[in-house]
Image (cartoon, rainbow, N blue to C red; front, side):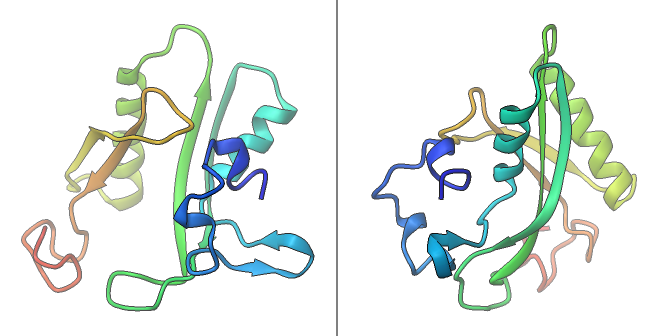
Length: 142
């Protein structure tokens, strides 16, 4: 629970901690709900400069439907160093998206709130199934 919630400043009463959202297993352990747990472990064990990409499986107690799955993949990046900026992050993420999904993928980075980073951002990419035109996979959002 420490690496998944406490170290990420998730309040004790936050809904993500309850049984409806998180898979708890024997011995007070849980299946990670995001790959941010990797970042915490790296920062505990290494000094800056730090540059990592942490892809992995995540588990949430979601009812399966066309846009939700109890098991999904997530990718996060962490860079801790002097002389870096949000521009460096944007370039890195856009390069990653092009390599991972093809050079035609459209991407945008937008501000977002996460209790454990400042500033925070999230990345959206165009649907790889329809090339951004709109389909059932992306609920016509492109």
